[in-house]
Image (tube, rainbow, N blue to C red):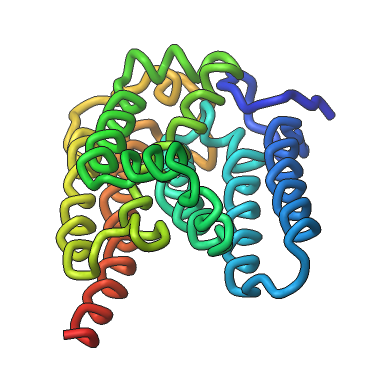
Length: 259
């Protein structure tokens, strides 16, 4: 068993032998340790719902960055790489913000620096622009091919997705007064679906494989690179649509109830 600290592209034939990634486990343990320290300092009485969301977030981050998903997504299947993006860029960040206890938000907002920082980051323009820039940059073929060949580059891609997702969801899931009004969230979430159309269109309609790291990878289950890329485009397009539609529906029905 060969343990490395983060996933990286490989030209070796795929094997189902377990290969843990120390970095993925370290991040999961660090997140759990931070939450345990908070619970110990604050004492009982924290919302169980928030804790449940937080634990789901930790599991999501760990599952997307450890074997086998991370290994497959690093350099074998572009479709799994795109699935990693959905988890790290959309699902896990939303769960992390839902898992932040209300008292944490209050303590951050009580100081002028904390309030100024969070207010700036929670602006819808910052969220949409930051998310779109990171989404587009991390899907540039030449850059992704280069970054996936080293653990540091692969780590940077994964963590940039997580950071982009936090920026995207802050205006929706942050505590009041940071979050947008419910009616504004509906429009914001609709706009958030637009950036995904850019890489999804290239993946779906390109006449040739865009990423050499996945084109030249050893094939798995007979899936050729062109088919894998089309599956990735479908995952990007419909997967992101489903996640954002779920959030959009919650915001829409809440707006209708408050009208």
